[in-house]
Image 1 (cartoon, rainbow, N blue to C red):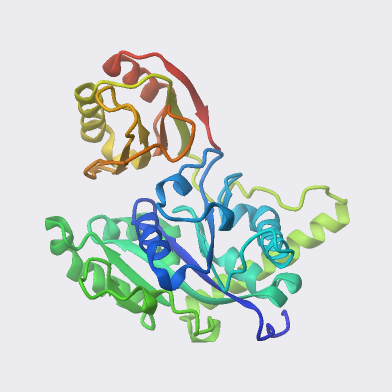
Image 2: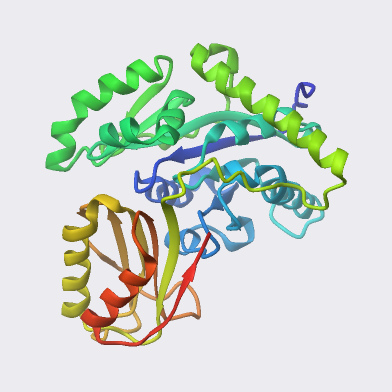
Length: 366
């Protein structure tokens, strides 16, 4: 076990939650709050196409790192470790602004246990950073079913210090909230619950970095998960040293079900608003149960300089939001899909037929 972190160690808040729960929205609110102007952000995405950092309005580019070579539970011993060390080094050298807090937003498929283990056990990291809290976002509409159907979601809840419930302001959210709250209290009896839609919500309470993560206060099942992860880390280290592997990490294919795939559809010309709206609505109606997450920026004929942000979680299609300008020089439509048992080519053909525009390419992001 790593020695206790020095007083100068930077507190880390791990922001987790299943696909579509509302992590990026919560993070957007955080970075716009003046109290958190000295916060660095690491955004992890499942796959190689980074979009989340473009959808988080207000995140300073010089204090933001995207990790896109996989999900954190698979790459934490390599890519995320390098990102943490590099962020600290460049800040110390004056190349980046000094920061007093770090928020790591994990992909919705991430098992938080490996991230926590690395932050707590890695000697070099433990001298620079200290895990303060795990904040888990849960969707009031889909949360109950998601936790029952996805083990990652259950672990994200059970290990949390603070649980933020989103979409309570929707009809389905209000109906599902009581049952969901009972489940959350059973899985994480020590966690503090917050309503993301409450008018008096204080982000300072959610992202308070004063409390140090205490694994001993967690339920026994969480202690078992962390112990298993520690054993896995030791085994991986011995395997690497014994075989002189050059890679710092390997992707554990057993972390996620093989039927879950991530891919990106890129379209090089603006689309007609009505055609795109009909396509996305039909997709939600026919494939909704297996569309774990759809998000992206879309160029529309009627206003090509103001992209539309699209969010879909299974059958739920959120109201599109039109940005004032493109967040980067790339003005092509980009839609990232995370699906279960869906052939990516079928999605590409569907959009071809409905939008009547030639797609630039379909790329796997795994």
